[in-house]
Length: 67
Image (tube, rainbow, N blue to C red; front, side):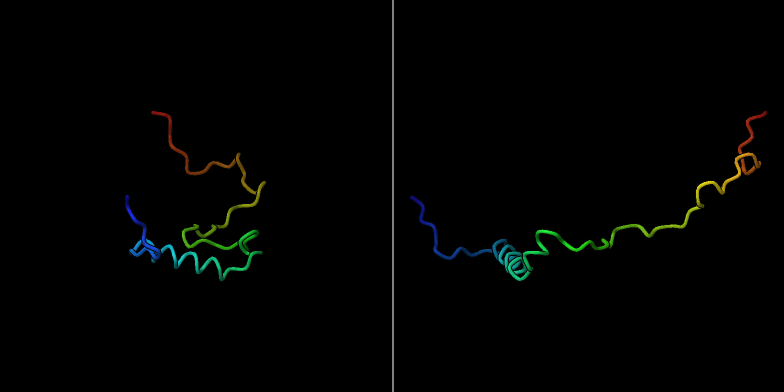
């Protein structure tokens, strides 16, 4: 039979303990309903033309389909 130590050791457990300690410091309200934030990977929004401002009858840079 294999005996299990009372206090396990290992690098993966140290990272897990760190995560648990961070969660203990976080208020319950923040865990239940987190404050919306902006992720670093989110793209920056770009301005667009408002609806109705594009004149579709005006010729623009179109590919020529005539040969």
